[in-house]
Amino acid sequence: MEARIVIRNAVVPGLGPGSAVVVEGVRIAALLGPGQPIDPRPGDWDVDADGRLVTAGLVDCHAHLALGALSRLAGLPGRAPASLSDLRLGFRRRLEDRAGPEELEPLARAGALAALRGGATTAFDLVLGRPGAAGEALEAVARGVSAVGLRASLSFGSRGAEGAAEVEAGAVFARARAGDPRLRGCPGLDGVAEASEAALEAAAAHVPALGLHASVGEDEGDLAHAFQRFGARPVEVLAARKLLGPRTVVAHAGTAIQGEGLALAESQSLLAVAPRAAMLWGAPLPPLLPFAALGVRIGFGTGGLFPDLACEAVAALMAHRQAERNASAGAGLVARVAFPAAARLASETFGAEIGGLVEGAAADLLVVDWRPPLPLPDVAEADLTLLWAGAPIAWAIVGGEVRLREGRLLGADEAEIAARAREAAGRLLRSGG
Image (cartoon, rainbow, N blue to C red; front, side):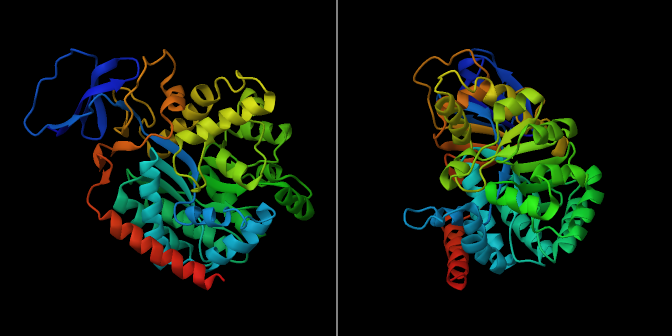
């Protein structure tokens, strides 16, 4: 008989206060309303939610777990670059060109912990690092992520002359993790302007079986570079090279127009947007609601910049309301579009039902350190993130395993994680000039 985790005295959406969630093995076994009895078993781990909200773990559709947080340094007043191209070719590129496994592992460990504390139990990470060392970089990030217990799909952002070899290294990593319940992978591209012809061809060969994680079209500079090289827009380049498909994640695409949206919809690719990163760098967001109307699968990501994923939903909604000067703008974007698409992506990737608080789903759960001071409205669970966004995560359970217990990471020294990440970041920043 499998051991159980029994979360009692919880606020469960749709059931109310005093409810319970029972986890057996890697899945949610039961959701029980107030007063419903739970027969005790020897070995039960009883968790007292103490009146706090229990919800499904969130899915970060586009992260940079290792190096993303370092970009915040460039976003401080007086340091911000004039454009995203300046950020990538200046501050970021200098770090990436020097980031090897010895830096990526501790930084990924810290990034995975930040993601878990921000409510993400699954992350799709585009690893950025030293050119020509994709295999070592992916293994280093995998070690860092595994130490924390985050569920993750890892890709390497290939670019330049080493791009084809980096794509192949991503494919090797992905195939080696094909049966891993917590770690998966696929090839990746860090833009199309710098992608070699060999890299594009190699990626296209792997898309049907493994998928692709591609970061493209963040701003007008990316658009200009795509036109200069290919005579086409960034998403059009992906479509023409047969790089779109149901297992493809296209990140950013801030310059995309209707034709590109149709290509994304027809291919069933997922568009991952990071609203707060776009706002910080002054980059555009694609037309999310018109794209959703076309049938584009849209999910939220963080870019590793700010780890609390629920706040990305708030930012996206606020951006629509401000742009349209209408408090009802963006209705359905979170609960009917973004969260279901992210859950579907995670479920298809890991072969389990992820992203839902339902019986039989993967036991990826959060106990949010938020005691609702008002009756929960009768809305979708995903829309409730707009109420609790920003609250700390007290407990995080990934695949039936407790990773955060009352805000503390189990099985690792958090002070040591932070210290080693600081040392690694310090080496990169000093060598990066």
